[in-house]
Length: 122
Image (cartoon, rainbow, N blue to C red; front, side, top):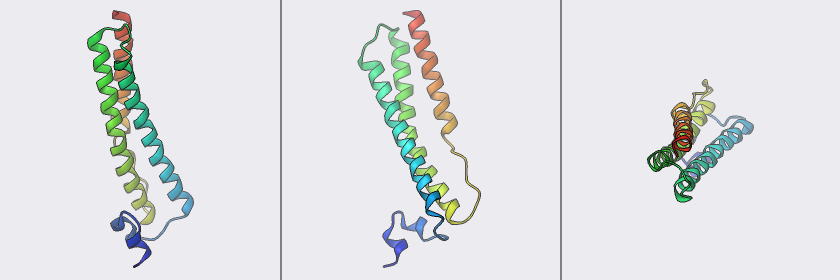
């Protein structure tokens, strides 16, 4: 059994050659940062609704849902971003951009605007 077949995902590790370990570890740290962001977004959405703050109900619920959906999208970005960057490193290609970074950032901005509106209208 080769080293590439023992590692997950085997299809990725069978391509190209191992990059400098520092780059792979940086890629893993970025993956973990996306996971941490996901947990924070989901916790924020749940807390916003669960605490029942004195905010306009519809806007508070909308902001909570937007935060939770963004929190669900972040691990998707984490996984596919990690795969794309690791593949690019192994094949000595340019690094791709994070595809869901802008939509997740926009969702957080929308949630912030909804919370501000909920405070003003409360």
